[in-house]
Image (cartoon, rainbow, N blue to C red; front, side, top):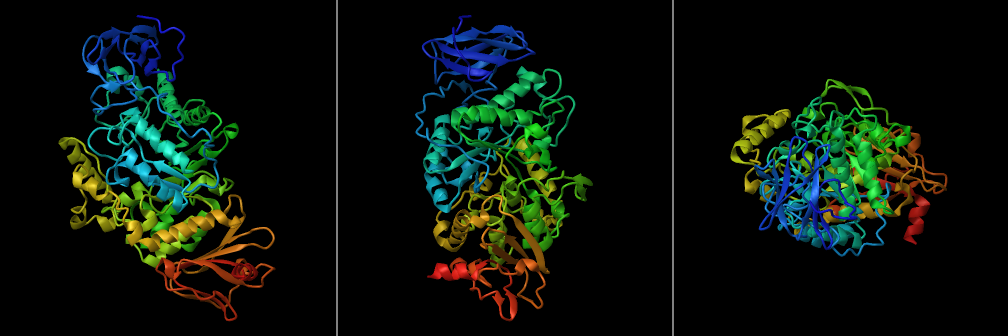
Amino acid sequence: MPDPGPFARRLPVGAEVVPGRGVHARVWAPIRKRVAVAVEGGPTVELAAEGGGYFSGLVEGIGAGARYKYRLDGGDLYPDLASRCQPDGPHGPSQVVDPTAFRWTDQRWPGLVDTGQVFYELHVGTFTPEGTFAAAAAKLPELADLGITAVEVMPVAEFPGRFGWGYDGVQLFAPTRLYGTPDDFRAFVNTAHGLGLGVILDVVYNHFGPDGNYVDAYAPQFHSKIHKTDWGEPFNFDGENSGPVREFFVANAGYWVDEFHLDGLRLDAVQAIFDDSPESVITAIARRARQAAGNRSVYVMAENEPQDSRLVRPVAKGGSGLDALWNDDLHHACRVALTGKNEGYFTDYLGSPQELVSAAKYGFLYQGQQYRWHRRRRGRPALDVPRHRFVTFIENHDQVANSGRGLRVHQLTSPSKWRAVTAYLLLGPGTPMLFQGQEYASSKPFLYFADHAESLAKLVHEGRRNELKRFRSQSAPEVLGLVAGPADVDTFNRCKLDHAERETHAAALALHTDLIALRKSDPAFKAGVPLDGAVIGPAAFVLRYFVPDDHDRLLVVNLGRDLRLEPAPEPLLAPPAVGGSWAVRWSSEDPRYGGHGTAPLDTDENWMIPGEAAVLLVPQDEKTAAAR
């Protein structure tokens, strides 16, 4: 086996170009005695055993673009688990990629800091009719104009079939061929940075997909013998031979940040990442992502159903040092308030004003209390966690799809309630996130779709129906009969956005654009501004933002009928010392947004609060000064 000479690999495994020499391949296959690289249209080259289950060597005379598989023990051929590209899908040959060939123009891009962000979750395959990285990049100026600061891209790691959500990835280093080439993804990121947008990638480190998964041919040691998940065998991060497994996933986190200039990661369902090691692999993943960024700032957040606040605590204090956690509690409370249904996993929420006040003040509602849906306690203390470390939303891919017919939340409630809760989201102290099309009240559903083989597709469809039976209102046979087949191409195509609705639904777009601009321009909505809240009616509450020098703001939200406060013994309603009374700065009932107008709230006849509305109040003297 030729010696590659002085060559520093970028990754611990995979095929990497050695300029002027060829390609260096390295594989972890501890159950194998022999591994060879079989080059398509070229030689088959035996790799040398290093020990510890690793095989490596230089394949001379080939470079970027070469296609290959590994021949294991002189038998069958398999794609590379660490392939950077699978042009024919997960079952086909792997392709050598030179990550240095792309010409970046984002050298001055600073990355993402942990405050001031407004996220936008998108699925590349349905964000545009074409469903490609290039088509999505062409739409990024619209998101920049909206005021978004970073897009969160649903998983792009290679998966089987013609379409899918991406959570069944099997080659975690290869952007799926369905959306374009690796350089097309780089171009997407480069374009985003040129527009002032960051890019965060959703990554799945809790399981491989069931189809196209060849890990057992190389190393069954990838799977834990101790832990179990609902999705299959979890990864072995803490058992025998776990070192190379940890290295694989930690390297993957750094790879996306290094070779694609990504600005962060969203870690999917980390409650299914089991690790009893002295240092959690989640901590190691976050650290590697930051190291890979160099001087750029990186943002790492997680989805964590148990709501473990230790994930966002500093490493020095026993945490994992993540920047944020998704806040399902706030979503669930808002969803019940909007729809009136607290079934299924909404059982432990009432949609009450107190819940919405508490979610704004403290982030998670459940920080260790009993949780009926899980039949155990949920959460850990988080009262001291800064509120911007909670990512808040009223739509995301899961929650829209779990409405059975993939209905958007604006289709499940009244227009005025939807506008009011949108204001609560975008003016709240959490870090808000929109789901694709939400900003213009998209009429397109977001359904569960996955192009599996027929036998698996039937099981997935039935499993989907069974999941929805948890919701009483969706459990009737005639409703379950409406659940779209995940493997039906029409299910996928129905979810593609219609960007013409930005014009036909201009009022909704104006609502979101104005609120994001207000969030960015008004000092009341900067991270760290003190906030308090109070319930003032059966469906009404106020949030008061304490801004220095008597520049306080009062957000009044009423999701019920018109409310007259007589009396009004709530100190948070008292006007600042300067100004003497409150004046309307912004209202969800502005006719521009489809509303019916807003009369003064703080009157000589006491407080008159409109129903199904959110109104932002400022001191009267500020309103007068603005008018002049």
